Length: 218
Picture 1 (cartoon, rainbow, N blue to C red):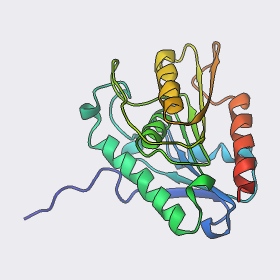
Picture 2 (cartoon, rainbow, N blue to C red):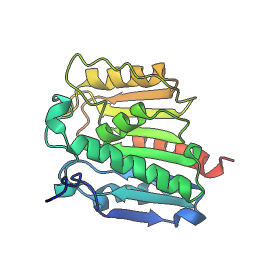
Picture 3 (cartoon, one colour):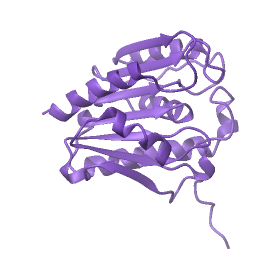
C-alpha cells in the first residue's frame, strides 16, 4: 500500500547567503517568484548590503509555489499553497531553534513569493522584524474577506507595487495594507507610477533601513 503523496514543496533545497544562522544578528526569509528560484531572489542580497544577516531562500517545486493567479479561488491553488505556507512555517521554526527570535526575523518576497509571504504573515501575526511585500498581496479572489485576528504588535510592513502591474491590481495592494494595519502592523504602502514588475531602488532602501534596525535589535 502506498502512503499519501508528499506535499509538493517538501524536500526542496534552501539557498543561503550572508552569515550562518548561529552567528547572525538577524535573519531574512526570501521567497522567490514564479518561474524563478533561490538564486533570483538572493540577487537582492548585494543590493540590501547589510552585514551580519543570514539569508534563507526556499525553493518551490517546478519553480512555482502554486499554479494559478494569486487571485484565483484558493482551492484551485492547492496543494501548492498550503505546502508553501508550511515551508515558511518550518523555516521560521528553524531560525528560532537557532536562537534568533521572531523580532529579528524579516519575511521578504517578490511577486508570487510576495503573495505567499503576505499570506503567511497574515495567518501567523507576531512581532516580526519586518514583512516586505514587493509586488504582491494577500491571496484569494475578488471579494475575499480576511477576518483573521491576532496582533503584529507594531511589526513594520511594507507594500510596494506599480500602479499598472499586470499581475497585481492596485486594489489588492490597498486591501492587503488595510488588513495588516487592522492587525497591528506599522504599514508603509508605496505605489509607483508606471513602474514595471520589478524591485526599485526606493524599495530596496526601505528594506535596508529595516535590516539596519534588525541587526541592532536587542
